[in-house]
Every structure is written in structure tokens, then in C-alpha cells.
Length: 120
Image 1: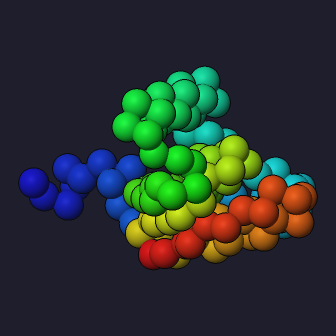
Image 2 (image 1 turned 180 degrees about the horizontal axis):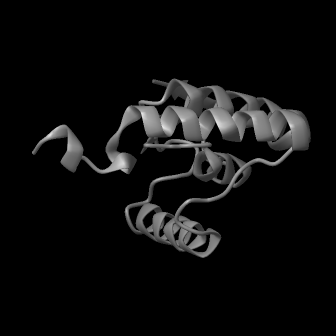
């Protein structure tokens, strides 16, 4: 595959510039960004996770969850609101983690007590 064949979505440069804009938008307008795969899908994933944990008698507090390609970390933030602990959000975009860090801080101030480890 040549460089000209590479999909723009597969490049770090694309995601760095995307999350740099998202970070600026958060700072200027308070917009937290979008859920890339949709809110409905996120809630289906959370329902599925609850079912799997219940089936194997795991609790929300004792289960570690890694969100790879976290973007703005809205999925781990929703899980934190539901009492999940041991959350780690990872992304290869430094700008994504910068945005996620601000959102986690903002949500922690809103009494959700979001305790999410953020890593690049």
C-alpha cells in the first residue's frame, strides 16, 4: 500500500487535528463533542457489559475496563457515572487524551467522581 492509498482516518495527523478542534470547541463553547458510534450504541454496549458482569458475578467496582481508542472518553465517563471503577481510557492521539482529561475533570466536578486513568 502506498502513502497515497492510505485512508485519512487511519492517520495520526487526522486524529490530532480533529481532537485539537474538539478541544478548542470545548474551551470556547463548552461542547463535549460527539459519541462517534452514537449514543444508542453506547447504551447497548453498557447494557451488554452489565449482563456479562452479572452472569459471571463480577461487580462494577471490582472490574477493570480498558477503552482503546477512547476519543473524548465519553464511554468511560458514562461507566463512571454508573459506579464502575478501574477504568482506563487509551488513545494514540495526544490531543484526544488532552480533551478527555478536561472532560474527566469537568465531570468529576459535577459529582460523578470519575476516576479514569488516561494514557497515550
